Length: 155
Image 1: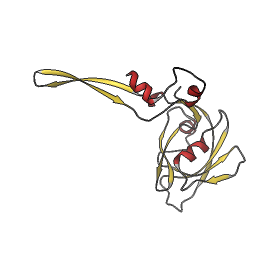
Image 2 (image 1 turned 135 degrees about the vertical axis):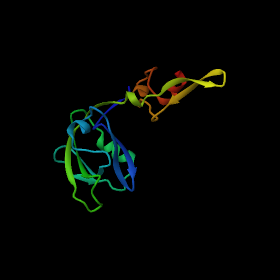
Image 3 (image 1 turned 90 degrees about the horizontal axis):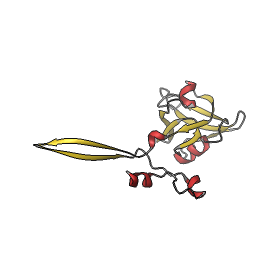
């Protein structure tokens, strides 16, 4: 399955900051109205009271693992707004994790008909927005688990 439990934000690393690149429509981050593209995550805390751990300079995959968690659990983020300087005012927000569908990230194909002189040729395009693999389904022995390489081979 192309889903996970998190806040529904696509993140990127920029200048030692974990930055919001995109908000997943219908995800907790987008629905809350508390995050915007370009905001920087400077700290992550678990639950309503957990200490916030500074994440500036932390690898992106480590920050992502801190933000993901069980459905309906709370994660707190220390945010430096996109329009603030490095010494700008931070704010702490709380979000409740939910199931995030990543179906738009699945491998897909498109066939285009292109005229070349008198002939029309078909060109196949494979779009692979991200690499993915359902490790849990694979570990359980599911023969039809999702993975980028398997999905591309089926196309």
